[in-house]
Amino acid sequence: MRYPTRPRRQPRVARAFSLIEIMIVLAIMLVLAGIVGFAVFGQRDKADIQATRVQLESFESAMRAFRLDYRRYPTEEEGIAVLWSKETLDPEADTSVWSGYVETPVARDLWGSEWGYSTESDEFAIDDEDTAAGPTFDIWSHGPDKEDGTEDDIHLRTGSSDEDEFGGDLLSPDGP
Image 1 (cartoon, helix red, strand yellow):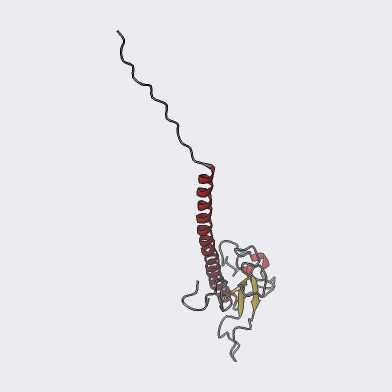
Image 2 (cartoon, helix red, strand yellow; image 1 turned 90 degrees about the vertical axis):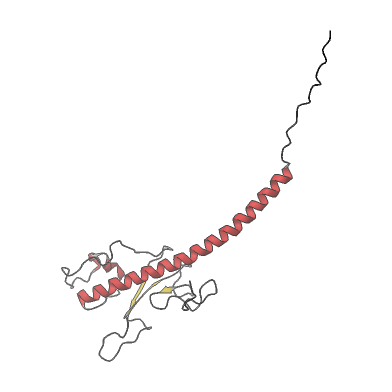
């Protein structure tokens, strides 16, 4: 007696993605990565500018402490390095009064340029009694382009130019 046989099933062939489908998915992923990357790097630029402003404010506090100890701001020869290094202090100055005004040396800004420093900045007036109506120094970063005197310079008091690289007003409360 012969038993009925079951029909044999044909094995299923797994269907793979075609090359065109893979290329479309990759293209979509690249477009999304570009959009996200552009947004992230734009925020990073703003964060670097804000961090530079915070560093400048820290220098301002250290300069005021230096002035309390020495009754003057550092000379241009001493520069801001005198805030963290006694070696740059004027040889005629009393070294026993010096106390590290900045804990960690910050010789360069976030873009790798040395800080700009000038005494008796043109931006600040001095009254008749030769006491500063405002700071008699200016400290600045050369900004992302690393060139002095350009629109992206970030000054202690002025913030930067009237407009940032994103077209916003830096001096307004809505600035970065």
